[in-house]
Image 1 (cartoon, rainbow, N blue to C red):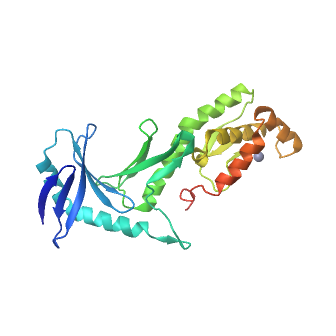
Image 2: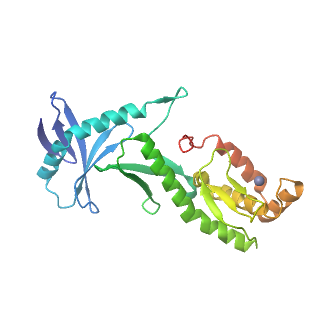
Image 3: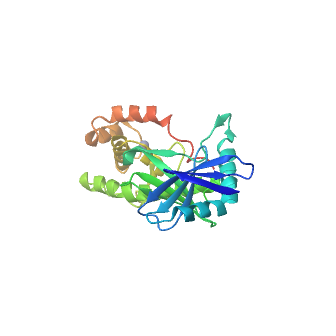
Amino acid sequence: MSADDRTNSQLKLLLPDGSPLICRVRTSARARMIRIRILPPEGAVELVLPRRADPEEAKRFALSKMDWIMRARDTMLQQNTVKNNGRTEDRFPRSLPLRYLGGDMPVEYVFRPCSWTAAKCDPEKRRIIVTGNVLDPDRVREALRDMLKRCTADFLIPHFHGLAEKFAFSPGNCTIRIQKGRWGSCSAKGGAISLNAMLLLLPENIVEYILIHELCHLRQMNHSERFWKEVEKYCPDFLKRRRDLRKLEKYLMVYFCEN
Ligand SMILES: [Zn+2]
């Protein structure tokens, strides 16, 4: 195995069978050490270098990790084409449609030789980074589910309490869960409210309707005419928002719900 020349932002490595492997090379001001990223879904290889890194060192680093790179690519390619109910699931999503936070956010995968997998969302830089053992699709999904719950807690709970205060509701505890087919629930005992972390996949105006819907259950524990009158008070165009929700629901990612 030998390393070939580094051209522009690409590095060509020669595999044992003589075939070339082109790695993308990117310099990053934030990188403190050389990192290798395997990008889904097709397993492209990217080397991220600290600003002052020596290209020769990057080449040596990539070559020393060649076994891992090949295994990682194979795993990603195999795992990503697992058929689920006759449908190909994207087991390493390239982006997540976090509409509440402004839309699609690309997912980057950064390998580290360790046993944990963690996902972090950076809404300002508009990206999600999954770090650690990024080769196991179940761990990746678990990490993204945890991230979704944390983000919902960070972004939605303050909004929820703000609305409650604005309209003079006094809800109990608010908890976040990932659920299939239920956006929120309100308990008769103590007015505890549970919100679905997948709310982040919905646009803000629909999320607001759902929050108001749950708050109104504090006054009407049913879906009677009186309940809808209450909802209408705070959300006059709730019928439209509810229709939009029904349309959107069909296209939301099943990815998060599988167990
Ligand atoms: Zn309801």
